[in-house]
Length: 165
Image (cartoon, rainbow, N blue to C red):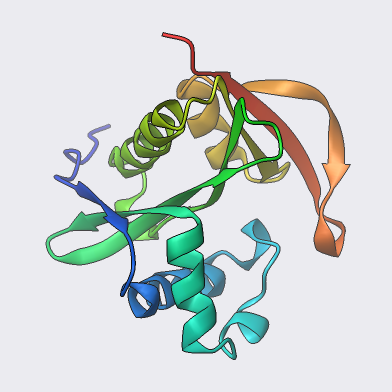
């Protein structure tokens, strides 16, 4: 069996003025993988421009770009614990999956979390999303015992990765 060559992707961090770009990729993610997020497309499509803009200035938002197209996103959030950061809202377009894009996005959030002084990076993933769980485990995350119930009743796993070098 042959596998396609990994895509040449670059990672860009969104910032002030990128709210509309974030809106476009987030709505695509919500359409394509509604099971993976707590927010729904039906809700998010009605948010105003200020809300989208606030999100890219409040959270570290990294986008993967291939041939001029945004094909993935991962975001980092600070938690109450100053030693902990969270990887949230990760999504890769179906055409870019299994092409190293997810790994590059995770690496970007890891680097961001380290520069923020965090010692651990955590995430939650729906228990039925086996490909995402496998990606996170290959990236060094380990499962925290037990499950949580997210909004909408989905069962989630919590994973953690040490950022110690």
